[in-house]
Image 1 (cartoon, rainbow, N blue to C red):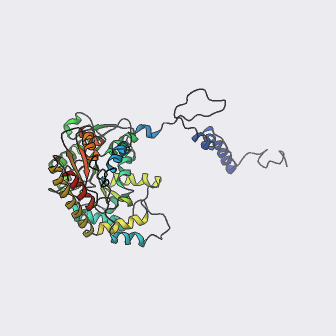
Image 2 (cartoon, helix red, strand yellow):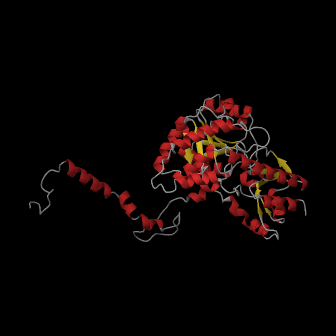
Image 3 (cartoon, rainbow, N blue to C red):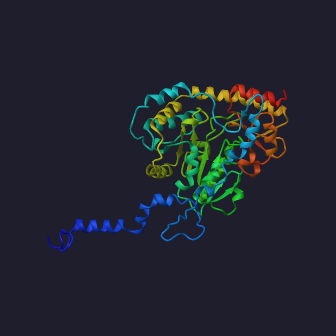
Length: 427
């Protein structure tokens, strides 16, 4: 053949050949060549190279994401937990708000009913799930005007909160505002996105700043504080004036003990306008579904749509059996009422015991925690409780202003709650 047997040599390439040549050149670019060596580069652990590399050696200069974050809080009290666990009567762990009561049979039946389905779930969730969420929000919390398309299921609300600033496209020039005493994941979300962050409970603390995102948490974790309607309306008005997104973490909305907690989407708060407002809801507490990782976000249709598009590309899908379980849980109020009464009874036992032991309980009008202090450093209180076989969470986990408090959870069995009360009484 002319040209030594190469069919393409000696003539002008046609469209297909030109495409192949471009592909060949693209695949031979240095960036793609480096990808072929990706496995070897990943084995080079140091983020910063020390010394002179050997000839031809490639050195990874990546930043470790974990270096941006604080130590995981509960890892820092491992020694205190060991002390508490040495108590002759065993450990009473009131440090983490993890449910202990079995998942209701109705929910387990719904999960099992679709456990054999092999295909991918949808990121947006089934129509049945989104309709059940809309109905439950109206029935339980007076949230109206929500279209099912403005509901987005998430793989537990913690992953949503940690990723929300990034999902919304925030970066180094943006400010994220979180409560002064707050669930640590709000700060983590800001750190992962590389934004600025400010702790503030009042709008006057913001001065001339124009935040990109304000996190609210009512009822609060850890304090149990409930924000009143006037406060919430002021935040909404401020956000509308300055084009700020408000993300309201409402995971404890169904666990109010004194008065009524309002959603940011309650018509009494937002006048039925959900623009730039997001409400974050979880079934971990009210339906004991922490192990299922079952939550959803609802609100501004435009924001929900944007997050949906990003999450579709990222494969952030709630498994179909979990979606079915969520649908059942949202459609049934009886199991939720039974669970709430369990927590109410445990709260009363612990509240009386703590008061009798000289503790002051602040806020705590809702949620699953008693925000407690003995007027001393929280770490000293932590040790005092550990000597009695009780483990709590130190208040400094949640911000500098929590340094004299401990967070005591209601999430233990009736028997363990009774044991804690007995130890607090000195018996």
